[in-house]
Image 1: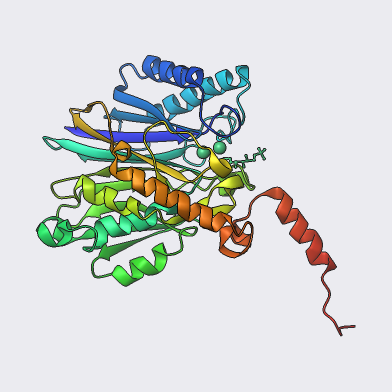
Image 2: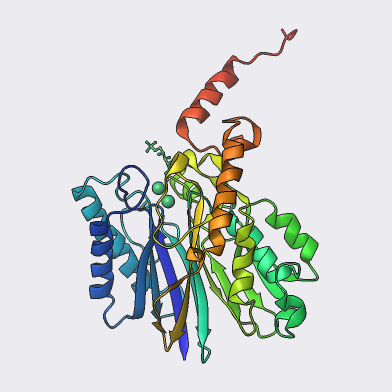
Length: 368
Ligand code: F6R
Ligand code: MG
Ligand code: MG
């Protein structure tokens, strides 16, 4: 049967700053999804990563379904009322528009969706990251879907070895979705040349070249493009199908042992090492660190198993210690150089005003 997976996530308020949503907030969102999802959803799962709540849904309405998007929007609106009632910080933060207009894309929440013919066994992964932006998945996607040094299936499995098509989006383009499709392995250097720039070029989706099937889908929201100013980082979600014609689950997970540096962290303005964390983990140090969770599901006729919490495994304890050490090292140099994001990414009002003000006071010596 043809099934659609939709994950829609938003930050609608947190306890004690930007740490994590409250239990009551999660309950409210869950209740609305359960009630309004009757007859529309086959199954759903709700969890959080840092201050973001993700709603995973299976259904048969296809991607971009107004009904499914409206349901998520209503759940976040209802949740916002609870967040306000509890005095949570940043209540309704990611709901940037007043009225729902057919699709939550461009309204604040992050969306990743895929429609496919369900396999007899359908393993897939739900990634959710906080204190970072969609480019955080660039390196892990490149390594899992295009680099045999990490993803052995590219040389060991004939189907996986046919390679993958990367759809890459220029997220600085605000006029519309500007994308390019590039094939690994032939276009590897072109793919690398784009993906190195995590703030501008972002993996939007990946397809199998053996079968044309969708393999991965990433949310590409840039909140500052919607709001015109800093409103928090974009905290991306990703769906990835695994096994068979796709990389194995462990191959998709493997790149997260690097703890690569990503944009985000305190005030969305710094670089930090991306830490793989268990489900429902909040934030702490320096409003971070940037974190990513990954839940593995199996699915039958659109019904989910309980999630297997991939980064809760003891193997990742060492990786977490390593990413703390990497972030610590960079934090030692405070705001200098690569510790803080470049000017173009500094949306935080105060510093932009400060720099503009000084720009007027600059003068060129010797000029009349
Ligand atoms: C928000 C975030 C935080 C805030 C910071 C300041 O997702 O990452 O680092 O930017 O806590 O928040 P305000 O300016 O709202 O006090
Ligand atoms: Mg936030
Ligand atoms: Mg967040």
